[in-house]
Image (cartoon, rainbow, N blue to C red):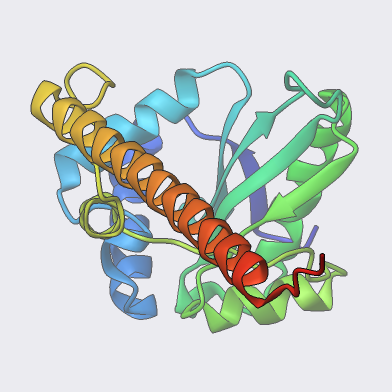
Length: 225
């Protein structure tokens, strides 16, 4: 670690500086709410929650005693279908005036030590598309693409599902509305009746056709004495 550079877990006294850094990163990256809220008090509450949550990590990167960078992460897993424990890197940011001094590298080194201590076998990062600096930094230290992510707002997905579903499910009960059920039953009954009627008509038609063929065969045969 370079002289004047220090990394440690965040404490309550760091919160004002961390909130300021988060808002600065939000403006610089131009990704808006995808990164964080623009409400300082709400952002402060979220940082406190992450700091107090088991597995949550908030690191401060300091240069000459002033907070110049932050790293947010959390331990995830193992889950119901996997025993893999991963260190999920939510964000890493260094103020422009403190870059190229090894602060980002120092924060990530401290984070890796925490990941090993927690038994994490992987370090995951999901940088936003607009965070070019973070993309370059992660690629430089060895992060490789793992998978693509897709995202949609809840309201947009709800509208699309409603438009694509002929009989939407009631969000209140998790069941089809009664009128929809009745309409569905009626349509199925009509379809069965129509199919049965068609089969009956085809059966009568075949019987008539056979009778006509039988009469024709009888009238065309030669009778000898």
